[in-house]
Amino acid sequence: MIGRLNLMLKPVIAFAMLAITSLASAAEFTIVTAKGYVRFAVPDQWAVMAMQTKPPVSVAAFQVANPADGGTPHSSNVAVSLFHIETERGQAAASAIGKQYGRLPPSISTLEGWAIYTQEASQQGATYTIIDEKKPFADVVVGLRFAWPHLPANPPGYDQSMNRAFESLRRSVSSGLGAPASRPGEVVRRPESP
Picture (cartoon, rainbow, N blue to C red):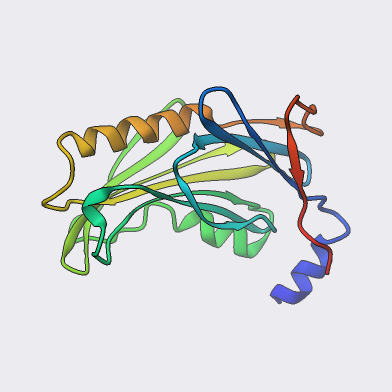
């Protein structure tokens, strides 16, 4: 089914990823969808862990540097996902946002059209804060995830700094229908054709 779905989407979806670096020490990414695009910005110092730009589920994953997690199996991670909900796989992935991982269900709130799910869960002996958010943009649903461990050596105020970084990422998300306008300094990277 997935192979057949990919074949059906190929002629319909022109998909590209554009990245530019701004003067604010951030990398801005533009992911082009079938009918529009979604933009977001992350700090330059976040390491890109994965970049899967092909629909129906596109994911950009980043690791946030934290000296406290050195030599441990833990890390602070961020994911930006685009769900093409006109597909079965995209719908299923989008509906999993807010899934309960810990003993308690996530607290649910809304802000500026974002559905926000906040919870704590254990992984390999550490408690993690997990914040998932989703909101429709252009012709997709955008999902954001921040997950970070509560480690004894975390710097003072680490939780607050992670919350501020998440708010900054959320505010950076924008979208539009049609082709995105070209910008000065832009670097265009397109997925290779099979």
